[in-house]
Image (cartoon, rainbow, N blue to C red):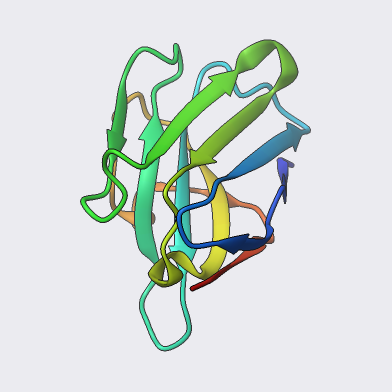
Length: 124
């Protein structure tokens, strides 16, 4: 059983930065794609970013391109989301998830294990 635990959320200011982490236990993450999604009140879960198993390939959602960067440290079984130039519309619960394929999927249906989420709130 894979367990994913997100951390690093909290209160940020518009224009500021936050860094999220997600650490796994129960399975090594080195062979899976990792993704970040977010869920804001009244909205559907939105794809944020994904990174391939080697860390060489990434894809980001249009709303965060150029502002958020996904990275991973396979030795630490951890994936990161560096968020810069935050906006109030980035306020959401952020989830990390695993995808056992080697494809950078943007659709949530391909992701099998999910963390509990970490709240990010951006004030204007």
